[in-house]
Image (tube, rainbow, N blue to C red):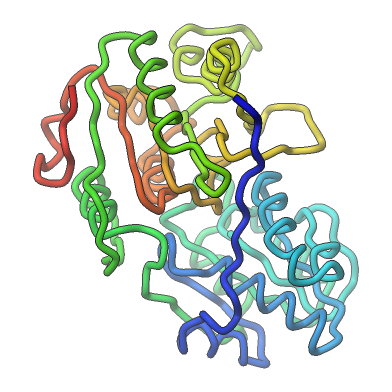
Length: 342
């Protein structure tokens, strides 16, 4: 199987809604909120491109995770080489006219206070349902820091189907999640008995959907399966990126991988990508596969690096298909919100 690149897609500026266009036309710094799939990143990208190419501003687009920077760079490249060259880490800021921060909830207060000293105008987008890092700034803190920003909220979900959203609400009933108007198919919980059956199912799904324009993600809670002492721990390794990547490569599936602890500078994203819940934030895929879903409650209660927000991010990465591989049904989930297979 040949390795194929991730299919990067930036909607044309003419496709933006009136709500999104209002943010673009705002001349004052913006505070942009909205749930997953509402287009916060798309608006930030177009605002950065317009700043650079139309308004001749020295603009920077800033985010925290490496994979999201790669995604933003590739989405911007086809529209503006100049704008794509000004996408950077939150820790590599230079003085400029305007800084736009995507996924601002990932950053610490001290980091944002430092960024605030590099430009007169600081705009940001944030969704605090996706605040995955304990050190990330709170909603109150960021509003107190950027007191003059004009607040906009995006409401329409352009990524997820109503079936995905209804399933997410059933699993995470305490989350305030906007409805979706797009109709699709139910998520599938596939019963598998062991690791080998999971691998067989993943490969079958990949073979069903793989094409140049179809992006597939396999999302896991852990990166390399090591504990705080740097030793491999089976309880982590059985749900880690490295294990699934190694087995898929050995079975002839060409894919890319990334997790935050991996010491690499050049992040690769192919159209079959294995990554952690946290490193998937900001990205979207046509098909998402989540193995070991029967470990949902155990992961949240036992491991301090995984919580309900991680699963919220994972569920809402998909545009079309969501597969959850599990050794059993989870009784607390409304059976009307998914299809059982196996």
